[in-house]
Image 1 (spheres, one colour):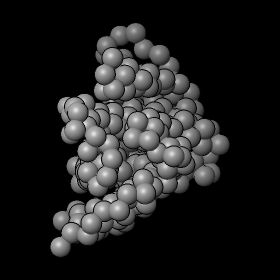
Image 2 (tube, rainbow, N blue to C red):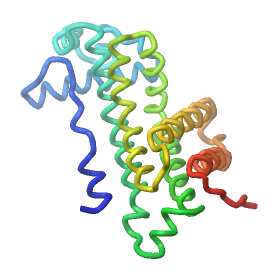
Image 3 (tube, rainbow, N blue to C red):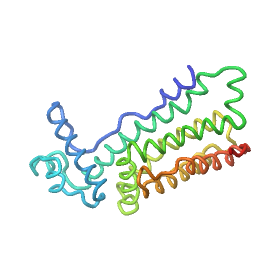
Image 4 (cartoon, helix red, strand yellow):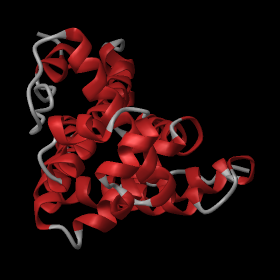
Length: 237
């Protein structure tokens, strides 16, 4: 089994929702529409704006529909987070697959170059930057939802546990990759990288998309990765 195939086989299982289970396609579509509406509210107004009435209005369904599928607000909030987590997980999976691709397609001397020295830093930074740009340029609403849910997790015990489990997905992907490239402290290094990614993402969200300085983002990520891997990268002109 190749490293890419092994990575794919380790992808997390399907997200588990808490609300009322559905057996008919029409019911599942309505339930999904309610959660999509709730997620739009999170992006626009924050998690605290989720209410059965506001979600029903946003989803254009009867109020009774939201209370049928979700017995209380906590269940509705939890399943809205799980919908976000499901969408976010697909971004993480694409990111991790692309991280492995340069190594998967290399052999011999080229593989040695890619797993040591400045070229390794370049490979990692390319994918980290692509991940940040995907979230802050092309999936901006998802990045805003991420910020909203992480803040709410400080106040909501139930959401805190769900958020903690979700956060482990990206961390585990980075740990696996850093193990592969012989990081001396893969778990701690993965946590440092995630903290850096969150800082870069947050600053990007404070700007208009057209004002995001990709070169500055690259420099920050390159500096952090080079320090973690103890690889000196020549300064570019």
